[in-house]
Structure formats: structure tokens, C-alpha cells
Image (cartoon, rainbow over all chains, first blue to last red; front, top):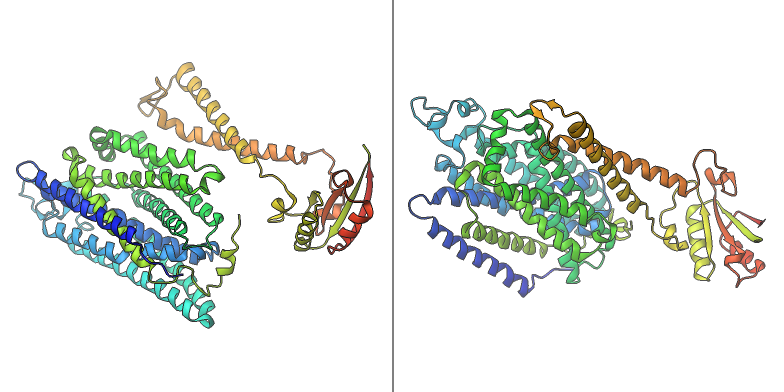
Length: 404
Length: 178
């Protein structure tokens, strides 16, 4: 069945974007002048949002590749939803490119301190930072851009490949099985690339904001949070489409499975959060604790609050089987932890860049709403591009009879 | 109370499932199915209720968490406060992080063991208990469906036998239980 973006959805996303622009504009005006940190505040917030939604897109692509590589059957009924979310990647990559390019030309714009050549190279400058300069071999603009472009190109090629083969399968029943096995191989190959890139890209884009600090599991921590957010978006989109009557073949068991993934990835994220926190707390080495001291001194409520939300809510509420099959409970919990994971990224970026001067005001709210509206609209438009139930996938029958 | 029991044997789980569906649709009550492995989807057909093992697992886990917390608070804070890695144990809350892994492990330990023991007790398969399956072949490659006359009083024994024979059985056994 072909999906049409309803007028109501168009209106809601447009209003979200307009309200976002309005609030962001107010935020820009408020931050003008002495001590407003306008450029830093704006681009840091831009980075928070573009990274958050980019990470959801890439996690959806990862999830698709994972299903192909493991030859899972159940997901075929919701495959088009996953593809539509992954299909937002090109847009989100564009936004990432905007913010990364701008910051590169602004010598880091007080977000990426290491992009400033005074800090890294000029030993006479009073900005020179020996600890940061020691990382110059990895953290320099040339190598940074080589890596960033390699990530984007690889992600883009895999995305286009999966999308192309998925549509080809619809139109070409005789090739369906061959396409399935090609997807299987490409999925496994993607996982190999993603295993490395998910970590290194998290270091490049987020961890390097706190240039003095490092944590080896940071990449997995980011990835777990993004994966959980992506699962929430998948659940919400599936429930939305089902409510409108577009996915008649998706039954309670599919919803239950998506709910289980949300539950499981919440635990994965909490586990990463705790592992990183506890080891640094226990060892108590100054160069490692800086990250947490900054956040505990300036973001105590948000930092621990979002951990509480992202861990306790899914654990206690989504634990029972009935809750994972209930659209209302899934929607409420999903929306709450989506906000929780957004706050997680916000504290990561703000703690390193704005530090004590960060605050939550119209600009944060505005850019958040603007990106949310844009991201939702992109997914909805992507959904119209193909039939919502894929045809001729070898696992389609299995998925339609999915029962747990 | 004397009761007549039918044991209908099948050599395929799908045939048994179709047979059970057919019998249940005619109003027959299937009291039990013996199988060497779990038959997917048989529960709703013969009217077995959803398991409550999950609820028990939660309660066992909660017990484990409580016992671990009380224990560690007594050992490490009340009874013999220790100084580990420059972190003196005078307050449970301030050293909470150090206690989390143990709390977690003990929660899992209690939940897992509690569940396993409950499962064995519920199935009456603890060591030393005599097996109550009607035929040893149900632990190998045969599937047995059990019907009781007392639960199917609206059918006569002949009618039940006829119904069973129409479902592709390989053997039919009848026993009088006291």
C-alpha cells in the first residue's frame, strides 16, 4: 500500500519547523552582544541536533544491516520503516557537513579547541596547550576531514545499495533470492566497517570536544544511545503508520519485538554509562575525572536526571510483556527516553564546549524543534517512495506469520 | 476417583497440533501434551495459561537485590568499614557505585536459580521424583496427547476414541486411573 503524507502531518511538521525557527531567532537575538557566546552557542546546539538525528539514521542503517547479516525473518514487515529512517542519512550528513565545515573555518569556533592552530602548533602563543598538541598526529584538520569524508562516503554507498536492492526485489521476483544473499554479504561487510567507524567517528565528532579527556568505550556509549533512540523512532513510526491503517500485516508480535529491542538497547546504554562512570570514579585519576567534574558541577540535575530517565523508565515500565504490546505505553515511554537521549548528547557537547556558560533557553528549544520537524518530515516523505510492505523478500511469508 | 484416560500417540508435532485444533473445536478438553521438545504454538490451542515464571523471576531478583544490599551494608559499612583505593567505607550511599556490580550479580544469581528451581518444582522434575509421562518414547521422538473422561463428560468413551482415531494417531492407549 502506498503511503501518503497526510495534511495533518504536513501541518504539524511545518509548524514544528516554524516554531523552531522562531525560537532559534529569539535565542540568537538574546545571545547577541557581550558575553552571549553567540557563535559558540549556536554551532554547539547545531552540532547536538545534527549529530543526534544523524546518529539515529546511521543506527537504523546498522539495524537493517544487522537483520540482513543475521538473516532475520521477522523484520521484513517493518523493513520499509527502517529503510525510511535510514534514508534520512543524506540530509543529516548534509547538516553535519554544514556544522563541521563552519567550525573548521572558525578555527573550531570554541567548540573544537584542537582546530585552532594557536592551541596545537604555536608554542609562543598563550593559547598553546601541550596536552592537546600531543594529539596533533590524529587531531588535525586534514586527517579529520579525510576520516569524516570516508565515513560519509562509505555510509552513503551502503545506504544506496540497500535501498536500490530493496526496490529491485519488489520488481524482480526471479532475482529476489539472489538479492537476499547479496544483502546478506553486504550487511556483514557493513558491520565490519561500522564496528570501526562507529567508535572513531564518535571520538572525532564528540569526544574531541573534550580534547584533554579520553575514554576507550566512548564510541560504544554513543552508539548504544543512538541505537536506543533509533529503536524508539522505529517503534513510534510503526505505531503511527499502524494507527493510520497502513501496516495491516504488522501484528502485536512485531511491535513486541521492537519494544524488546528498545528495552534491551536501553540496558546496553545504561551499562555503558555505568561502566564508564564507575571505572573513572574508582580510579580517580585527574585527567580522567575532568569530564565528570565539569558535568557534575554544572549539569548535575540534567546529567543524572537523564540517566535516571533512560534507565529506570524503560526498565520498570517496559519489563512486562503486555507493556511492550501496548501502543500507548510504548509511545509515552518512547517519547520520554527519546528526550532523555537528546539530553545525553546535549550534555556531552555542551559540557565540553560551553562548560559553565551553557543554559537551556529559546535557542536550545528552537533548534531542537526545528530539527525534529525536519527529521520527521524527511522520514515521512521517504515512506511515500516505496510500497510499505515489501514484495518477494524470501522472508516475507515468515514475517507475516510472526508470532511470539 | 476412578478415571479413564486416553493416551493418543503421534509421530509428528504438526499432526498433533492439527489434531488438537480439531478436537478442541469439537469441544473436547485436552488435558496434557507430552513432547520431547516445546511445541511452538500448542499452548493457546489446548488452553494453557500464560506462564507466570516472569513475575517470579522479578520477585526473586528483587529478593537478591535486597539481600545483597543488606549484606554489603552490614559487611562493608557497619561491621568492618574498610578503606579501599582511598575510598573509606563509612557511607553506603557515597560508595554506592562500588556496590552496584555485586548487587547486579546477586540479583541475576537469585533470579536465575529461583527460576530454575521453580521450573523444576512446577514440572515435578526434581531429581528423585518418578517421571509422570505415560510412555518413555515421549522423551525421544513421539508425542502424546492426554484426554480424561472426567473432563469430557459429554462424550462417551467410544466417541472420544473415534475422534482421536480421525486425527492421524499412530497408537492409542487407554488406562484406568485410581
